[in-house]
Each structure stands twice: as C-alpha cells, then as structure tokens.
Length: 72
Image (tube, rainbow, N blue to C red; front, side, top):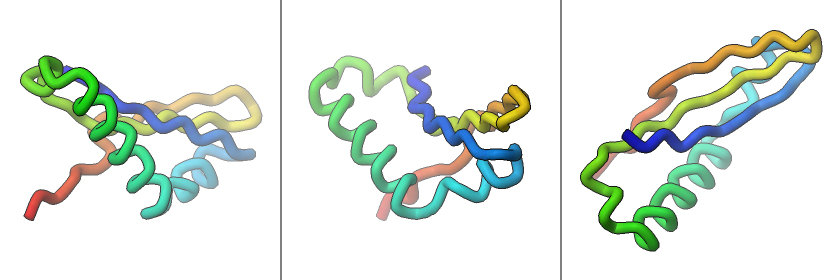
C-alpha cells in the first residue's frame, strides 16, 4: 500500500484539519500521479491519501484514507 501524506501544521489540530483544501488535495493527487508515472510497477500496491495534523503544542493526529479520488 502506498500512502501519500500531506502534513499540515497549525496552532491547533482543528485549524490544521481545515487547512487541507481542494487546491492542496489536487496538488497531492498530482504528486501521486507523477510518482506512479515514474514507478508504474507500484500501481498494483494500491494507494491512499493520508493527512498528518500537527499542533503547536506537539499534538499529532494521523487521518488515514483522508480523502478519495473520484474516477470518471
């Protein structure tokens, strides 16, 4: 399983969670597509998009499979 991970650091975990907008998701998906284009043999492993939230107090939360890419 390939996990493409976006890290968001903000003063609080809640603020970090709201920082992942459509533009950042599109950038992460584009990075995953570029990786798979360079490493096509990894495509069979499956993939997911995770988010790591980091707060100023050092709290960390991982959201596995935070979003999915809709295929037409």
